[in-house]
Every structure is written in C-alpha cells, then in structure tokens.
Length: 485
Length: 130
Image (cartoon, rainbow over all chains, first blue to last red):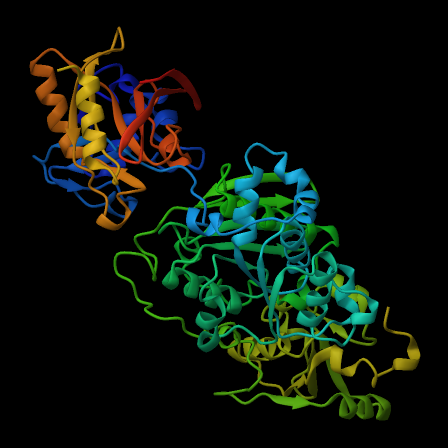
C-alpha cells in the first residue's frame, strides 16, 4: 500500500514522499516501514515502544493512530497518511491565584522563619505568600503522611487538614515519625496535630478522625487546593482519585511497598487521573494487604518527601513536576525512573465513554475474595482457643500454614504443613481428606481464599479457617513456647 | 506585511486563548517566509492552556506550500500570561529538526518570542526577542 509521509516527518524516511509497503493493516505497514527505514524506528517510537506523540496516522479521513485500530483490515484503495501532531500546553501555573497571594502578608518572625525560601529566586516573597495562602488536605497520617505533614507545615502552608481513622500503635513507630512513644493508642490525627503545632502554632489545622469513603470524601476535600494521598490501600486510593477527578482538585499520589515507592500527580488541569493508568484495582491475590507488605523505615520518608516537594512546586508554580508521570524509586538498588501516564480514552472517568459518574465505595475486600463474611459458600471457622484445645488434646488434624516464608520467620507456628497459597491446588494430595484441615495465615483472610481455592480445585475433605489468623491466636496458642520470634 | 507582524497579531487576537500556526520557508536555510494561522482544535475550556492542530489541516498546508516552492519548517504557538518557554508537553510533541516558535502574550500584548528546536532528545534554544 502507498503511504504518504508528511514533509515534516520525511527526514526519517530518506526524504521520500510516498513509500510503498506490503500489508493490509496499520500494524503490518508500520512494521514494514521501520524494517525498511531502521532509523525511523527510534524517531517514531519512544523508549517504551509506544508511538511518539507527534505522529498521527490516517487512513483516508479516519484517524487510526490509536493502537486498538492497528489490526483492522484496511480498504485496498485507501490512502495512508503519516502526519505530524502539533500540540502543546502552557508551562506550570501556580494553584494559588494572584488575588489570594496578594491577600497574604508576613510579620518579622515569618520573614526570619522562611528566610531560606525567600533567598531562592524561584520562590521568593511571592512564592512564600502562595505557600501561606495554600490549603492542603493530607489523607493518611501514617508512614507517608509523617514527612508530608511535617514538611508542608515547616514550609509554611497556611491551612493543613489531616484525615485518618486510626490510632497510633507501637508497630507504627518504625516508620511513622510524626508520632512518638507517648502517642500510642491516641488517634493519629491528634498526635499529628500536636506535631504541627509544635512546628508552627500559626498554621490552621483541621483534623478529621474518619475513614475516607464515598459519602464523606467530597466534603473532606471541598475547598482545598491540593490533596496528598498518603493512604496505604486501594479502596481509599480509588475513592480519593475519583473524588479529585470529579472536583478537579489535583492529587499528589504516593505509595510504598517493601523497598519501592511511587509518586505521581493526577487530575491537574484536566490531565490524566489515576484510573487512566490503573482503570481498576489489580486482580485477586496479586496485592498483599498493607499488613503483610512491610516497608523499610526511611522509604516512606523518601517518597513522602518527594510528595511534599511536588505539592509545594504545584502551589508555587515552579519547576517541572510529575503531572502525567509516575516516578518509581527502588531504594534497595537505588534505581529510579519516570514512566509516562497518558490520558486514556478508555478511562472509566475521563475517557470517551465514561462508566463512573460519581464517587462510589469500591468493595475491594469483596473484589479480592478476602471478605470476612463467608457468603455463597460458607466457610467454617475455628476460634483460636478452640484450636488450642484441640492441639492440647492431640486431635488428629492437619494445620496448613499458607503464609510467605518471610512472614513465618517472624511468627513461627509449630507442627504445621507449609504450603504457600499459590501451590495449594497443585499440592492438595499432601492433605488427608479423612481428617480436619485447618488453614492459618496472618489475619484469617487469605486462609479463606485458600479454602475457596482448594474447593474449586476439587478437594473434598473438611476445611476450617483459623478466625482472625495468627494475630488473634498470638496470646492463646503456645505462648509459653516462645514461638513468637 | 512581515510574517512576524501577522503572527503577533494572531497571538493577540486569540488572547486569552493560545494561538497556533505553521511556519513556511526554506528548510535548508531555516529562513521563514510566511505563516499560516491554524485553528486551535482543543476544547473551549482548555484553549487558554492548551493547543492542538488538525493533522489534516497540516497535510493541506504542506500540499499548498509545495506548489509554491515552500515547505513547512516549523510551527508557532502562544503562551498566555506565561513565559515563552516550552512546557513538558510542548517538548514531547517536538519533531526533531523542526523549528518551534513560542510567543508569550502578557495581558493581551506580545511580550517575548523564542524559537526552539529538538535534536537527539535535547532542546536547542535558538533565538529570543521581539
């Protein structure tokens, strides 16, 4: 077929105007074209193998640039055009209007306090006034929230709202540096508030001791300039993204897992939203719950600090930021890279055929098959003290520990068969269907999934779930054995 | 009329929206001979911060130019109340080897113009001033 190459792109194709290539689909023609002109490949495709933004493909009048049209069979006589896309956007603009900036003033103490900012050409008095005029919501006062809240407070953000439903626990202190030993059992928002006050009592602090949900998120973020997502679960993440997308409030997203973290900015100036890249949460079993994930102490400090830095850059309107990008940082091997996030036509919120029109609670537990209530097929549970009694009596039964090796290393459960959840179906022959089998995991949720998996695989023996998992059994079973760590 | 004057008029006329158009000239000497204003095809609500040109319009322009012995050597667009510096998005759309002219329009008046070109993933800043 004949392909017309625009004069603007001809440099990559030996300056030919018309190139004849065999093939009856766009994919075949592009393949042939880059085979014949290998240099063009680098020019037309980015590092990730996607067509660069400046290339547009037409079959006659129809734009066929989108990859889902590349396999359609083309009419024999249609003219294929390789044309340039010419587009662009304005550089970064501050989230804070000039009017709001001008309404702010500083006293002598503030001039002294923010001296290091005022010295920076890009920030100066104007930038610092924008920071003071800004209103930021931070959702999650945990690992990521700790640096975000403290740095935004220290930087001089005028109004900070902190939202968290949880209380401080001892295990939080390993990474949640906004809280201290004396805050254990206090609401995280109360502890965070005290820390902010300690940094700068002039900051307006609003706290909400609630879990973000579809029916409260709009009210939580209403009237704020930017939302910083410091939560640790997909349910909250989607609720926050959806609310930000509908209300047009930019979102600074952050996430951590073990040694890796991600930061991105979504919903800025009608830019891509979180769902453009991740239309729905990942499928069953792929995502470890936050409780099992774990993370190295300074990682949330690194990722949260980048989130705070991005939020400040948006507020001041300087630099290049992660709008439409996702920064990934691997703290173990010190790799980092920036992935591009494009606005997607298929996005269920901002795409061409949206399917979501308001913020909805997403029943993520249900989606993952990790729901507590055992619905369609009832799964029998066993209480920890009952299990303890049966072990004490020496009942004949099989206890299957489905946890990952690193979890078993922390809390050893004696005399068990160890079968990771992924191998259960394959290794069901190792279980005796004539006696009871009890499944254990950390929280008693994955063990439900394990029983379902085995049922589906055709296992017929009696199966029980240890209710509440090892966490609930900690103080009951074999506490004297020193099995715990 | 000089092409510069036409371009500035176009940019000021479109204010507070971004304008865009084609630069025609001689590729070998990078000499601009004339401009062809184009429509900003982006949505009404974002035209103040975004622009896009219809690729088929560019196709027509280049066929027309060819008949007159000219070729497309670049494109221009305006930034509204923002400096004439390419945004991240501007850079991603730059075709290596072509000229990209940015006119900064402040409060309705052209305040600055700069020209950029991209080679091997690097922006080359060429010229500035009105």
